[in-house]
Length: 149
Image 1 (cartoon, helix red, strand yellow):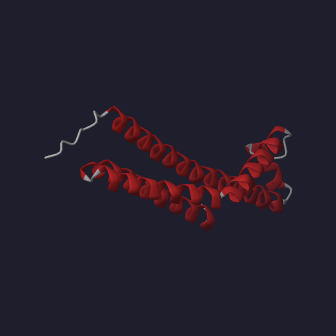
Image 2: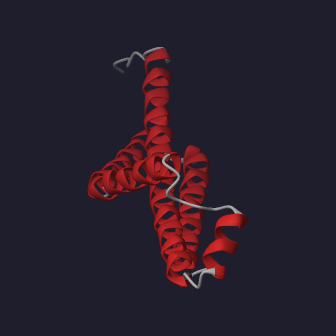
Image 3: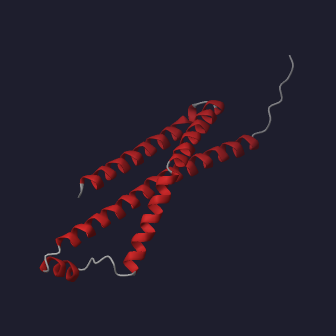
């Protein structure tokens, strides 16, 4: 595995682990008062929305690279069969194998970038769902009438 792919795997693993920790903290936050947890949720929501916004150009570029890869595959430009590899090796065209490896790594990078963006989208969806549930639960509570002493 190339160093770049290894680094991306590590970054994705860290991102997913961080998301898992944040989700566990949200579940454990039930003991906090509604206002405190509501503020924490909204703050976290803002951070995730900002991260998604900041990464939009990277995601768009990754989508283009993936689409191009699939189009090239459909046109037969990416030879992945043993026959193609053997033919290239036999004809001393290692540079074609190198270009194929570079292309495959670029594709993998793009897919990892989309996976990281999808993790952010999933975190955003969970936060929105929790906030919506909090609103619904608060609306369902009977109003407590304050009595004047």
